[in-house]
Length: 115
Image 1 (cartoon, rainbow, N blue to C red):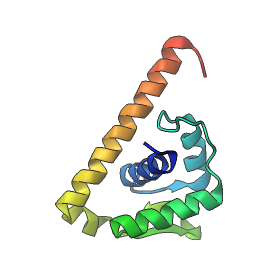
Image 2 (cartoon, rainbow, N blue to C red):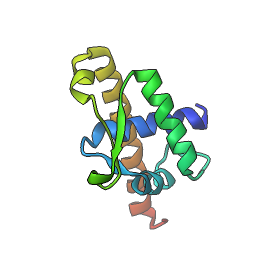
Image 3 (cartoon, rainbow, N blue to C red):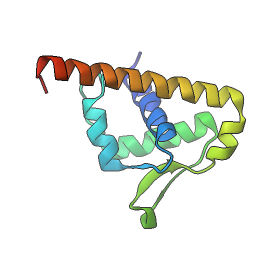
């Protein structure tokens, strides 16, 4: 799977599993540690913004970042999204895959002591 597609899937799953949202710094930090980041690339702010736009277009969702909310990125129309069974299933599958990959990475680091 191409790195950009992994990044899109990972960002989408993080948005879906964190209804209150995450900051750009949280996304960037977690991206560096996830197993899906096979090339060990960083997540520049411009790339992150491009990913958000592509996700909005592909899934017909709205992602916002509000200064009053600490610039936390979140899915705005989550209720509508959860009513669409196919999109909900797909996002749930992405979220579970992301959790499994992150769990695998954390277990490896715990067992080996490698950071």
